[in-house]
Length: 215
Ligand SMILES: C[S@@+](CC[C@H](N)C(=O)[O-])C[C@H]1O[C@@H](n2cnc3c(N)ncnc32)[C@H](O)[C@@H]1O
Image 1 (cartoon, rainbow, N blue to C red):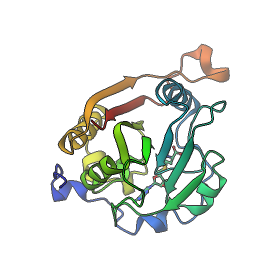
Image 2: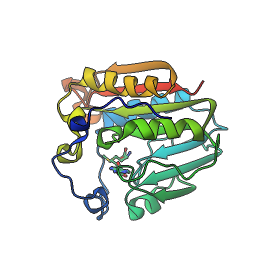
Image 3: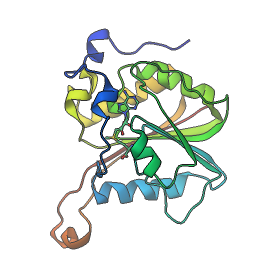
């Protein structure tokens, strides 16, 4: 059974209309800048085994996986079918609103590593989802939750909109620990704009990741 961490008022968001309506039209944009995306891809290169079955939860038309590496299988999930159909890294995908239903339609222990990018911030019931993920992710499998300081703020619950970057890290950790995830780690780094801006030392989107194991 999952353990509640949030108070009901922390789950409230400004725009309470169905999330599937917000994601009805595909957005072929990058939600995070190149500096963030490069750092994320480097992390994936270091942490994901080539033989892994990867689950990209709350995905879009991009998964940020290292371009040269083929994994055993990449399963995608999101809210917009057209975006997911355009994602060249996915072998299969499904759509589902996790704020309506947190059950995950995958077999027990069928995933080696689950990735979430710019995603956790929209969850109103993260405890149930994190609990259900433990069933789907293999023993010793991993979860990597990455995010920056941007969001569609009207769609994020108060626990996110009212917290600082450090609060966000601690909040995700507390939910994961409460559901039995272990070996918690986090990364919090500044990034620098790449390309023509690199010599100007302009900051890029800050990079945050919370990593956990299913022990
Ligand atoms: C900012 S986008 C990030 C997409 C992708 N991970 C990336 O890095 O480009 C947020 C994603 O979260 C997913 N999402 C938002 N609200 C959701 C909900 N209630 N249930 C399931 N997925 C949701 C959508 O698939 C949406 O594409």
